[in-house]
Image (cartoon, rainbow, N blue to C red; front, top):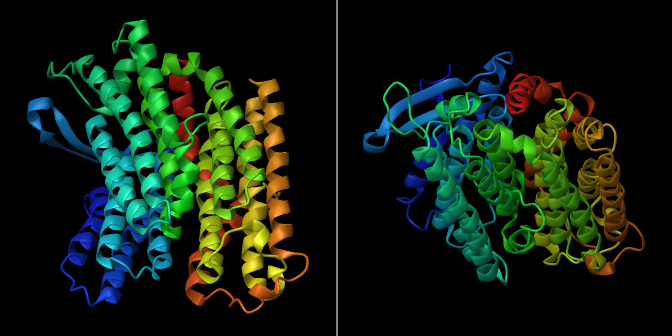
Length: 500
């Protein structure tokens, strides 16, 4: 039985765990870790039940909650989910649970790490459930603080630089979003009350009826501001330079969350806010957005091929794969591409989570990530090689694995509207295959490096974090309908809203 106010429980239950951890004596780190695991299990269970019970044919929001919050400014605590947000909620709950387990070897400042991680979990879940622009912004900003400290305190040798760079880039995007949010607030009036509104449903309804921000120049500037703010988070080239540094320095679990969930917040923000509130601008800007996606696909793949650090290679591959999401979201002549884009968001979240967890496994043993520093590792760690091979093949889009379906849908749908861009984007797939296969050859094949001949195989704990992701990658490769059925109705409505 699901609790009343389900979404609120899913958002704030991890915060209860964070509060409990603060009162555990320092000499009991295992208790803190146990609390962290225990407080990520119920949200995952609720998310799974929510997925099962969600009405696939309803284009509107479900499980809604709305109560007055700051009455003086007509701000509401408003939550709800639709087909766009359910996959992201499920992905967030799953990765949060797995990342707490993957963080079991954190032994410094344990209380602070897990308390901040659970606060981060709350903020991410809040972003995907908020239906009030102000509330969305609060959760968006709340995410910044724990990420800054999780990278800056528990990161690698250049952690301070990476944390500050992440903070400043994200802050620029947040300031742009804040300005646009205030423009929407003062440019809207609720018919029933005569008050300004942050309610995303009301704002979207006014946008459809062309009563929201009637000045074309202001609408264009607002769309541009939102696009840059979200593009920094995705990140699209040229707003991407913070990502490789953040990934390289972040602890393994934080890299998983960063690539698996936080990058998706950018594309989710475009779907949730930019398209419904500025549909005409979304249509006018579509070609430029597709070009941003194309540049990210090719540039990210080329940069990945040039890397010698395994973690940085995966970071650049994320830029390339998120370019496919942006390309698919730029097509409004059909729903195939945008369905592929949302599916790619979910698939990339699971595949890249596997990849970063696998990098963490080898780094914990060898304390290096230099691709050329290994060799013949398949003989030493065959099970590890099997998991990594699956993740690499999924990343390069091998038929029968999840990313193939989503990238194929994006390319098939995009070809109808952007033939040259789509044909050029296929070079990204070729480059992706090249750098993943070349990396696999250097790390796992060839003569065995005697230095690593005694490396232990993956542990049960590590296998426990990898196996659910591996099963999802295989399942969605053969049968993607569990996600496509979920998103289809909502995305069809979104496209119809944009094209008018």
